[in-house]
Image (cartoon, rainbow, N blue to C red; front, side, top):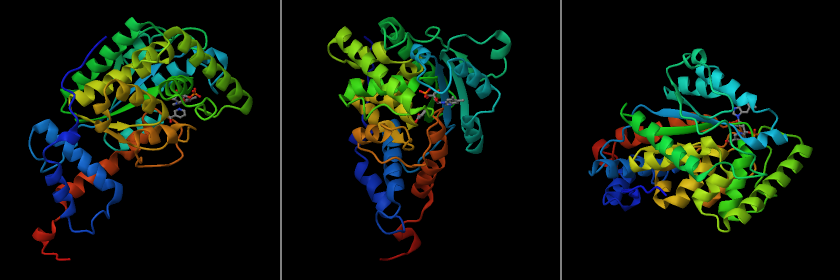
Length: 359
Ligand SMILES: Cc1cc2ncn([C@H]3O[C@H](COP(=O)(O)O)[C@@H](O)[C@H]3O)c2cc1C
Ligand SMILES: O=C(O)c1cccnc1
């Protein structure tokens, strides 16, 4: 079992009151910038903990999205609108700049990295050369079918966590201090639902949704298969420890996202959390190390059935609710300008004193 040290909660910062004072003294009615005020406070807390000093100015540097791709054995059971081949095809689409996440990253000046965490068939040398932003850290050729057997071995989980940590430390050298994690993996809403049920005890009916938009017949089957996966896993491990949940029910992309989240929090970077699948990884990370949650800003509420409940589990209000149900990191990429707005009001707005405004 791996451990990480020095994961501090920014909430314990001695500068909390000074940060709150700075926000309350801006030339506006107290609380009138709503959620943005909470975001500014959280950013300033994280950056105070990072520097050891009161955060005068929030800096958002080199925001980067990392899309992790992995295939899922359960895709063979017709639980998605698409076959596993589409995972690989979308990886090539990411490398050629043609996916939704590419558009939103371009719009908002977000650097984009694409990781093969374990798609069925690796890219050829020629395909890999399509983009310098491709990184290969494969855990296998897709997971096992979780309705039948464990998704992966504990050795693969540990390797996946290490890979996730590794990519974050390499991206950190660019000066990046805000990360977005995205995912691509046909059938990964099945894995995410199973993880959610195993970690929270929520029932299947309220936890399994339509993913890419499957038919009601497919949804009925998907629910039965996810229930079967969770029961099978329960018998295999007896109590659901987070690492066991990953081995039994996870995905290669989900495991690497968990490792990346832990490393990002350890490095005191801001983590802008995307939709249903990424939030399932966030849940695992927070079960392992609760302090990780204090580095999460939840970008949006996805239309996937259980995302609202997952967010309620974290007791958070997400920034956006646009009926998205795509993943890839798209909701987080769209929310970045709001995070930047929180930073700019904190950095640039006049105080009552400096502007001579009296209320
Ligand atoms: C063309 C296409 C592009 C996507 N981009 C993200 N997803 C999203 O859908 C998948 C999860 O839904 P399910 O569990 O129903 O398969 C993931 O790959 C997720 O990233 C896509 C899905 C498709 C078909
Ligand atoms: O919210 C998500 O991340 C999501 C929802 C449906 C399909 N793929 C991703």
